[in-house]
Length: 111
Ligand SMILES: [Zn+2]
Image (tube, rainbow, N blue to C red):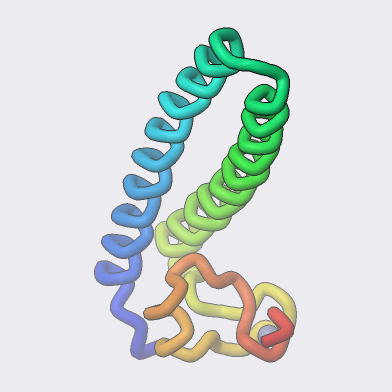
């Protein structure tokens, strides 16, 4: 297999750090929303709730990606990295360069 595992691992760890930093920043932002909500009127409170819902959705996406990253890192350790989890074919290197946490080939992932 042509995939550079060290490079993939480094990319995964970098992305993991980025996600964790974003998550920490979002947490600070959530605290700010709570404070605003107490000091301003009803309309802004609705805005705040909407923002909160969006932040929660983003947070769920981040958690899902962190899970994929953890799984990919485990696969690298097990020397099983780079194979489609659905059809078992090799995932093209180009795809893994774009998304090192990809667990399925383009065809199985549906594009
Ligand atoms: Zn596949």
